[in-house]
Image 1 (cartoon, rainbow, N blue to C red):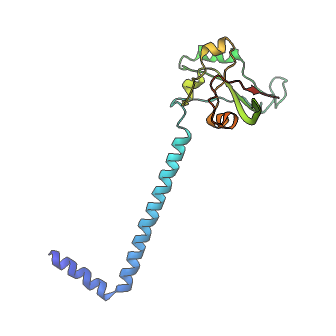
Image 2: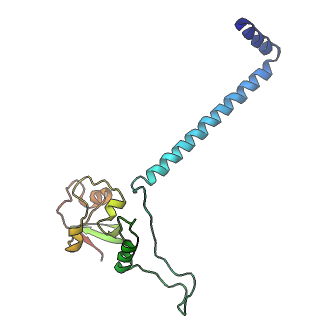
Image 3: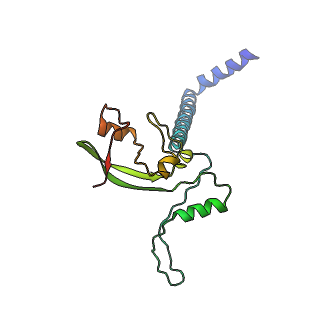
Length: 179
C-alpha cells in the first residue's frame, strides 16, 4: 500500500511535470507569503508592546484642550485648564482612582556649566512614577517630600545626561532651565 502510494505520485509527476512544478512553486510561494505576514504581524505586535511597555495596565489619560462650542454665553475655543482642586475632586469622588498625576510639558533650554541643549521638560506629581513605570539607572525618582518642600530636584534622561555631562556623573550637579 505504501509503495503503491509513491508509485502513483511518481507516475503523476512523470506524466505532467509542468503542472507538478507549477503546483510546487505555488505552494512554496504561499508558504513564503504566510511566513512574511506572520513575521510582519509579530514585529508590529512587539513594536506596540514596546511602545506601551512603560505604562501601568489600567491607566487612563485625560487631556485638557479647547471648547468646541459656546455654552451659556461663553465663547467657543476657550482653553480648558485643570486646577489642583479639579484633581482633588476627581480623586475624592471616584474611589477607583488610586494614583493621579497632572503632566505639563514644554521645550526648554537646559544649561549645565558651559554646555546646553534644547530638551522637552515635564512637570509631574510623584504619583506619575506609579503610573508610568520608568527605570532609573542612577539616583532616584521624585517623591512627595520633593513636591511638598518645593525642592529643586530633577530627573534627567540618558540623552540629556550624555549631552550635558558627557562621562561625568550628573548626580548632585546643578542645571538651569529656561532663558
